[in-house]
Image (cartoon, rainbow, N blue to C red; front, side, top):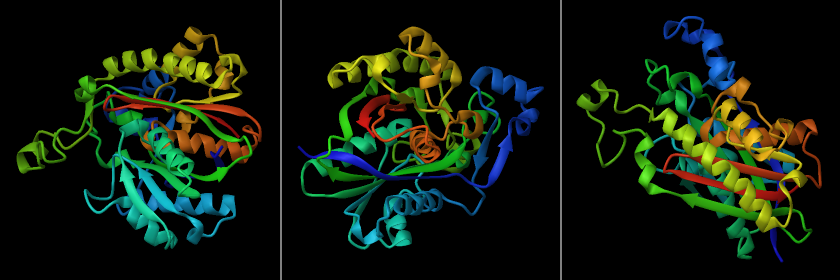
Length: 326
């Protein structure tokens, strides 16, 4: 049976480091205030001239190098993002041009912070169909471009970055073993950019009201995340025929260390199994899981044969998980 094996990974963040002290204008001793509530110490922001496609391109090139593949070998490029370069065309087409993947078809998809996990599900099914052999998925976001920097509840949380993975057809027993994808549209209003499309087009009035910036009902999202994450772990473990304690590493969406602390206590899974980088990068939205995967593959923390559970949750509401053997 065909499975989707990880052939290579790449991760990229902008050079500009933004420490918590940047937000001292919002709250006294911002570093202590932000770190105690989120676990974040710093994040990276794209420069004015840097776009999502730029970050995605850099991550893609690193993944190709890591996999020792020529761009022409790619059958498909998926860019998972909620901050595309523009509403059209697809950011993935820009990446295709940049990396010279002349034989691939390219498209974007958006499940907000679940986008990378949803993208892996799509890539996996393309490969399992037998029609496509190698798929490049890039989770990339530049939330610094859409934040309201007067909102202390959301502005300090986010950073920019891109995480890429190349999946290839394999019969080795390695790769994606199980997946679960869910959404609940009743919660769509909890995470949104109100004026950003046909529902409420951007106008001088909406800009004045900052409706073209990111909005999130933080407490409700925290409750949502702490409810669905244990269910993802339990569901994937059952489907995969393993016990949660047999999972070597868990890569959660990098939103808030308090969520991870809560989940560790609720499930009994040691916190050391949860791989994190949010202290350095903040919430990088669609990039977060891919960045952690790449960092820990390259450092040797994640080894060949390890059982890894990756999960995402975010706007929509959306959530999902992937269980794979490295």
